[in-house]
Length: 106
Image (cartoon, rainbow, N blue to C red; front, side, top):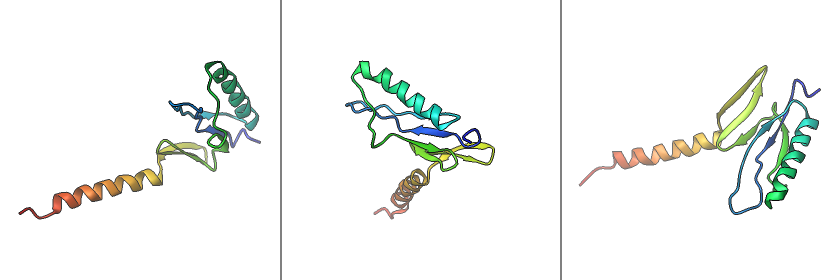
């Protein structure tokens, strides 16, 4: 039953020069599919469509990465925290900055 494990529609990105992204959290997989269909209807008159390669419906227990954050359910709590890839990029930038600061000056 999806009441305990709702899916989310991840990365709603239309095929256009200005990509838009979003996440829809739903109680059931059927509801997520209805939301996706409703958004597709809303996008159509505007000349936009979903990029099916990037649009997916996932269960929140599996989680999804979105704009540098991980959205995932742990037990009864919904946690949104920085993704591992975002943390790795941040550490690399800090490391490079610290090396520049620590470099000896002549």
